[in-house]
Amino acid sequence: MKTFRLKGLRLLLEKDTEPGHEKIELHEGLVINREEGGWWLLEVVVDADAKKVFDPLKEQETDVMMEVIISHENNDPATMVGRIRSGRELESTYSYLIDSKMAMKKEDVFNYILDSLIADGYTGDQLIEEFKNRKADNANWSQQMARSLYEQYREKGSPLSE
Image (cartoon, rainbow, N blue to C red; front, side, top):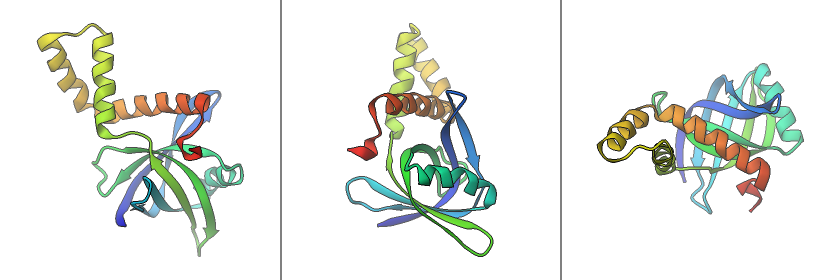
């Protein structure tokens, strides 16, 4: 197993029938690659405000799309889908364990960008130049792809159910 520091977390939650990002303020957190069947375990330590977000997700056993920033604040987010396994109260904070799987890889984002460029009619040198421009804004493209995956999971079901 490999363990990393969790540096940032955003949940993609439905708000008024549209998906919206909910930034979670972390006190601390860990991301553990369990190295078995693609499963990851997140431990998040949060305050009472975030507890109001996590408790209903846990009670309803809701699968949630997450953008997880691992190791350094400047890293691009990894998109995961997870389900809260447990939650418990600590002294002044709350700890939640989230079983999760990667929803997409970095190359998936690049493929998504290329597909959008082709759909927009770019070819040749223009395609290469615009790809470089869009790739520089990888975090925004990751968010767009996460929204697209969120819609797919709503229609077809979560990969956690497989």
